[in-house]
Length: 281
Ligand code: P6P
Image 1 (cartoon, rainbow, N blue to C red):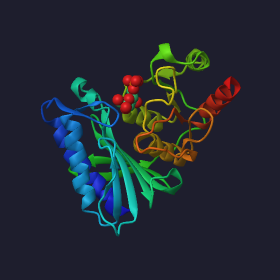
Image 2: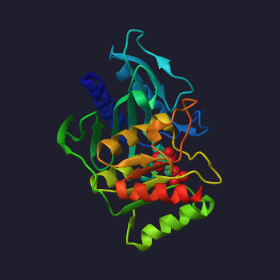
Image 3: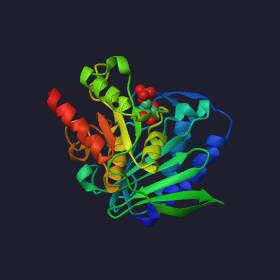
Image 4: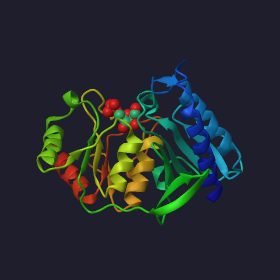
């Protein structure tokens, strides 16, 4: 597992350098979700593929930027799913973006998830790594990632990050979000999943939501590349992650690019989501 973490850290240092290059614009390609790929998306994907290919313990990798998984080493043990540069279009407006990784034993199933990791490329480059025991925060300084502290969530927080397009929200979802704001929760939403969830994790808690809605009944965020890694981290940090009704880590994707409605946060807020959504069924 250390070799995987080192490969992710090396990837992050190289991706940060790529981000710092002047805007290199859009490619002519689209990813599996029909999103036009930034050349930076493609470059970040190649960097991660190169670094992970050097780890003999990795059997298969799956990238959000590629249609199908890729076998690296038949004798490998781990499967890694990653989003190379989530929210990459935010680079153009100088907002933080991130890379997301889920580590699975033997197959891409949430029940086989053994670790997850994300990198935030912002004013500083930080990395959060979760295994069965801890959620660890690292800071990139002088070319090295240095351990900073362990992270945990309070039972209740104060930040609300409501994703999706409000005009398509279910009425009960809108009423629930409005109710949090009338109770004094602060709106913190940049449109980048990684910095938005990083802020909730570091500021002690709250709720990030990207619900199913009339325009996207199954939500927008990809289970393997985005939802499962953050669900693993938030649960390890003492929080919860649901699709509105149940733990997202109990859902099996039928296709590698399947999406799921998702709510990540402190236990009190997520419990409230489940009670509202259960009552609405
Ligand atoms: P919306 C970025 O494109 C992304 O995949 C996530 O990083 C982010 O949470 C979400 O989409 C934002 O989507 O519809 O609120 O712009």
